Length: 230
Image (cartoon, rainbow, N blue to C red; front, side, top):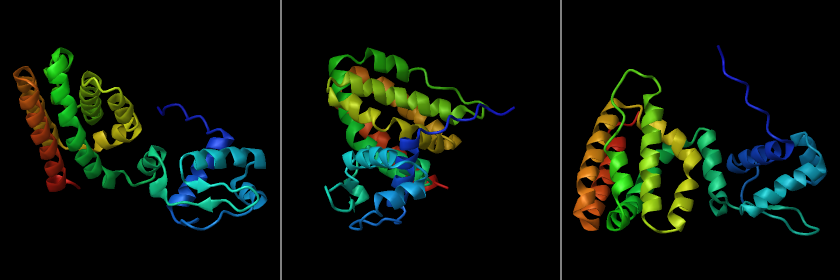
């Protein structure tokens, strides 16, 4: 039995997603200009007002420069926001993102864990004490990814930095996919349980100990991915 058919995208979102794909695959390279509105709308199968809505969204994300009375200019994708990251994750680039996500985690998570240990580690410690057990459940990688996401979320909120949960939340869509890839390997799951146990033990010892353990375990996750990927 198959699941429900996903609802189709609204025309403006469809146009935006298709245009973004063309920007990223080089159909419209950085520095070039987009075709005239009439031609572009026809190629996307949308009306010109719908096209303008999509163009405004992409301009807001820093991917296009809309100039009154002149062709719309394409900017470099690296100038765009995190919406580009989510799009790449949906279009075959996710595996290449995993090491970068793990590297970013190693840079940010130790500080959040240390701050949480200094402020109130109880919720984080309680969570780390109950990781998923190994099983034959085919959904286990997703269960593990959800557990790990909750761990990071508790650390971000517990840090007391109001921007930390917002920054982490921007990666939710990407991490849901990347985490399932990472935790598809049983050895990585076993090692992660060791990490959770080490962090669980370190949190009561104070921010320095908790931060050091968080850094070493985060770096170990990166090394483990590099050693066993594929």
